[in-house]
Image (cartoon, rainbow over all chains, first blue to last red):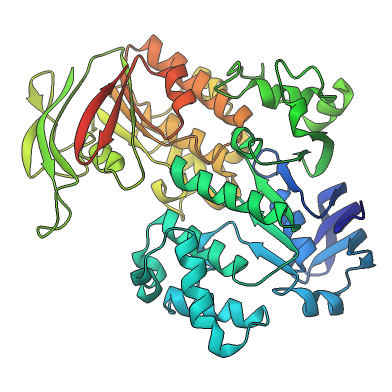
Length: 278
Length: 206
């Protein structure tokens, strides 16, 4: 099937000044490759600091000016350059940001959802209806519309962000840790909804540290470690002792789950060691 | 023994209490799990037990005496977001040495590295900073820990690493612990027995 999003050999570094004139590059991502096809939930898992969110920002074109990107990003078969991104962002590409600090603290949450619906190309007179509908889909009552972000609990604010990203009809949805801080019932509701979107033909990139619950909805899983993609495996390969997983790091991650072995690694391995184990 | 009897707490006088006549006992060397829906009052109960909130009714006692008002608290709370538990303007070394000076064996067990010492909290990842707050809370006079969702933002490997190190210290010092989590699989791994907080009441889980 034709890929909706294709990330190929993506590398990213940040330019940093040391002293007044000397510049050096701090590498963050190295040779990241993955594809998202329509109709799939593609989970990206890995430790914090592995670069999962940076990849999301790179796809969305949200990196600061001192970022240097190389490699190719294709969306729907065509290169994703700055101009095309600006036209597609919010309409065809949507991001659920990781931090609830992404909400505007001075604007009532209902209005923020109406903004993103407007941005997604929905006619102005329909946005109040759409906003109410999306908020209620995540179990948020109408009084949440009138609430400022600081009066919402962490889980509620996160669902407002979800409502903003799904108010439109984006083909590709990047969900960056959409379930942290949600209780099991709401977590399942969010994951089931992402699954529903995928079944309706959308592509979902689910970035998470929570391998166990990602597996309940994902078709494929890509494992990140220290800024690179180690392997992409179908989610049914995460089974038993993980015999069908190729990389030792992935197997260790699988066996460290409390519902499996809860095994801690002997010590922290450097990235070179992880690669040499292969 | 850390014992709470008939605790009652409400955030707002006009609403139902979050915690209503809750009694709980944690013995030294025992690990008790606590679960419940979000908003059920798990964290409020944790804060009450750690002495950060005063109950409106009921008593909290440590071996038959109330919790001390001053000095080192023998019951320490570990929070879900370590960023909110540290002073953002202090360097890691100062944070780590706030209450005591952790020995090298503990630092090694929690894999805390010397080169973090000169950094600020925002320059560590969430899991690294969580290990620093755990080391800080393990001062010699501390006898009970309340762990409130301390590993929910960690990946499985970092989570397993943190818990193995923590459980080892807790067992060797015969400390008591209350573990608050949504994760039933984690609780069944670490806790001796479990409770569920529902509508202000505690129910024992089999």
